Each structure stands twice: as structure tokens, then as C-alpha cells.
Image: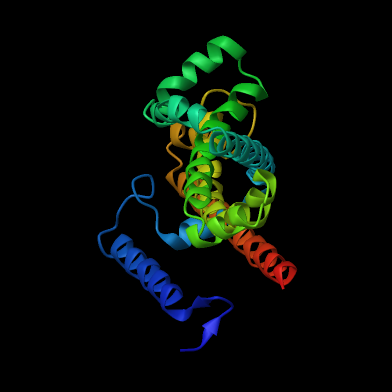
Length: 253
């Protein structure tokens, strides 16, 4: 099958078929626009009034990217420390699990009470969403380093730092990028949820205002933007993964 970049034609065909069926049903049953607008109406609104949401898109992108970067950094540090200090891992690992059992939507009001309606509580929400997949993926990558190679390095007199840098960390690169891909998709949704708490602009604000005004077409525009941004971040992480892993393999040769 011919491919469009790295994406086969099949998903594109399915997506087009989905929109065609949606358009047909909306027209056939004369569904009110406030209930379920047709795709053509949504796309027309997006292209006609794009200036209404472009500033919101930029704000959400900056917030999501900042939260992803901070969450990735914290996740990397936590995973590395817990791996290098096993007693600490045994003590703190359960709390990592617990941190993901508290719904963000429940924790969000507390963050507003503690830190106000500014940038900080929003950044904390995205960080909490993003750090966990990276931490768990890295810990699994460190632990699953080839035992034969680890044993060989120890027999050769390698230090703990050499063992970590030459074997365990390179082995953890693929899991690391898997965690980053998950976090990248979570970061956009985390940014939107954080904007619901109270913000001047952002896709979350645009979606809330559109919903209050029964502008369902604009709500769908916001949904499509969230999906597109998530896919773009995912694609950027994938591109970075190929570059870094290729560089790491060349460095080992």
C-alpha cells in the first residue's frame, strides 16, 4: 500500500468516510445545529472565524509544552533517583501510584485555593499528569537492562556511573520515549482542564464560552484542535525519538 509520510491511506479513508456519514445523517434527519452540527458547518465556522480562537491555541500550546517539559524533567529525575537508591524506591513507589489515583478534577479546586488563578496551578496540573508515565517507563527500562551485559560490566570493574551511563540508560531510551508519547497526548488535555479552572484565554476557555452560548460548532472546533495538537506533539516526540536513538546507536559503534 502506498503511504502518505508514515501514515497509511487507510486511517485517512476511514476518517473521510466518518465525516461523510456524519454529514449525511445530519442532513437526512435535519438535526439542529445546536445539537449536532454537520462537519461542513464546523469547518466553515473554523475557516471563517479562525481569528476568534487562534490566540487561544497559542496560549494552550505554550501551557501544554511548558507542563510537558517540566513533567518530563521531574519524571526523569524521580526515576533516576529511585533506580539508583533502591531503598528509596521501595519507600516511595506506592506514593507514585497513589498520586495517580486522585482525580485531577478533584485536586484542581485545592490548587486554586492554594495558588490562586494564575499560571502556577495550571502548570502543576499538567506536570502531575505528565510525570507519571515517564517515571514508570524509565524505571522499567532501567530494570530491564540485559542481565548478561550488566554482569559483564560488573566483572570488568565498571563503576556504578559507568554501568548506568553505558548500559542502563541507553536501554531505557525506547521506554522513555514511549512514556513521552503518552505524556505528550496527556499534556494538551491537562492544559485544557486547567484552563477550565479560570483563565483569560486558551482552548479550554474557548470551549467553555462556546458551550455556554450553545455554539456546538465551536465546541467541536475546540475538540478538533485538541486532537490535532495532541497528534502534532506525538509526532514531534516520534521524530525526536528516531533522531536520538539513531545518534545513540552511532555513538556505540
